[in-house]
Image (cartoon, rainbow, N blue to C red; front, side, top):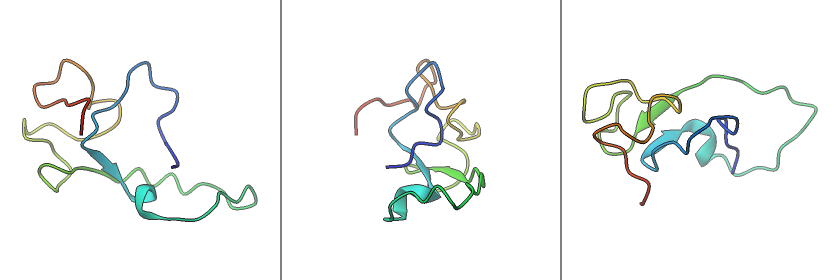
Length: 71
């Protein structure tokens, strides 16, 4: 699975979702990445988590009240 946040110092919440998770194709190095950065929380189904803070790989980290490391 394409992970758009591989360089983070933490593992993002397992409830974080992004569009590339649902595209089942092999990576093509000739196609530039879209970098659309569209994320949402699978618990709330919108771009903010249950704590009303934005859902992004950088923000969805350990210590956040709604963070989960297990599905």
